[in-house]
Amino acid sequence: MAWPYRLCRRFKSLSSTIRSQRFSVSTHPKLPEDSSTIDPRSLLHSAPDPKPSDHSPFLLFPKTHISTLPNGIRIATQTSPPHAQTTATVGVWIDAGSRFETPETNGTAHFLEHMIFKGTRRRTARGLEEEIEDMGARLNAYTSREQTTFYANVLREDVPVAVDILADILQNSTFSEQAIRRERDVILREMEEVQGQTEEVIFDHLHSVAFRDSLLGNTILGPPENIRSISRNNLYQYISTHYTSPRMVVSASGAVEHDEIVSLVERLFKDFSMDPTSAAELVDRSPAIFTGSEVRLENNDMPIAHWAIAFKGSAWADPNSIPIMVIQSLLGSWCRSIGVGNCSGSQLARRVSTLGLAESIMAFNTNYCDTGLFGIYATATPDCLGDLSCVIMEELRRLACQVSDAEVIRARNQLKSALLLHIDGTSAVAENNGRQLLTYGRIVQFQEYFTRIDAVDAATIKEMARDMLIGKDVAIAAMGPIHQLPPYEWFRSQTYMK
Image 1 (cartoon, helix red, strand yellow):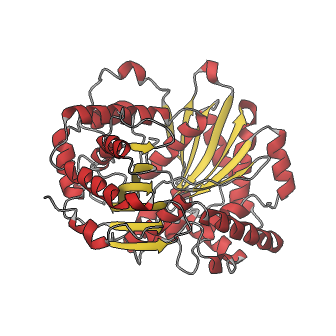
Image 2 (cartoon, rainbow, N blue to C red):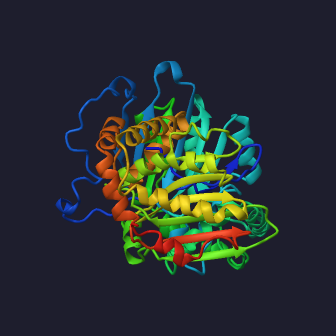
């Protein structure tokens, strides 16, 4: 499923230009040897007796075909209807990201993303770029804390070439010393640019304090000293350790045929290690422990304060992930520049807008293999921080006792709409299927997912809020003119019912 959660991944595109962006994703959970020990509500299982609903006429999507090769690579394809078969997306989704690095090698996954386009034993860097541009195609990549993806957008007739290019860059990249030196400077400049993107910085700091002393707290880019020292050997070592066939999904959508993709992958993706160690097993060796903590970076030269408060959220397959997504939708988001305020369905947005307390607010929900982060991100002028903090904490506490059926119905409908809007286009469909196979080991159909969402009522929200928010530790990251932001102890005290 393509989730309407906060996006947080590093993105690299090879076409006529190179650009950067961030989003968020996850790795698949480890299945116990005795599958009967899994919570039957888990998203690893189909929902019990999913029933067709009033949504049925709108949920008729092409079937997703899935195959697993002998080497462990999984293949998912979804073919568009004949009238829409002009373009396609094909990509490789890998259970590997910054979480699987050591403190000494943190930044390698992202560095590798840059280097993967810099030439192979069969293609020079210039030859690769010209081949992509001659097809009118785009070759993209992104890195997150738990996942790395490489994918191509091409015309129907160029699908075989796209698969060949993906196989080539992942198996035959040369990583020349000259290219490595050049990319060091590129990444260091990228780091400087990211420091100017306050939201990015806040969420990096939020991860570092929420998952203190665990690898999930690593940044995606890594520290500058690591970027200056990452070697060719580090890159090859990362590929050989983490780019293994059982941790890969090849996902394609649009003008594609399943049997053709299977044949191409079977022929071209043959040099990867078959090490059966899963990403989930590596996570089990170094689990992420949520820590109540904070970081404050005061800078009075900034006109606006930026801050976020987070609670321990849910893992991807946790059945609680569904109620939490509904809570996120219920709290919603608001920005002064958009203009919608008093008319918003979110009580939090209405209060903040009416009182003029913020420039923007946003509920966020980020899932990982074994844990998650749920909370509120806000920007405001210094004189509003105290009142804004009071309103946010009051609204979070209210979830545990005063949620109406009308609010929940609205939140469910908004969530369903967001889910459908997030699979518009072949890239979104391919990403949806690739990510689901990594996170759930299966494709969750929309009818099942909507059934799970519709099962969330006001009582479910109250129970979930009590379990997740009331009396729980919080993580806080703040920067800017924040001298009027209440102290950590105040926020912690506000998690208790009055």
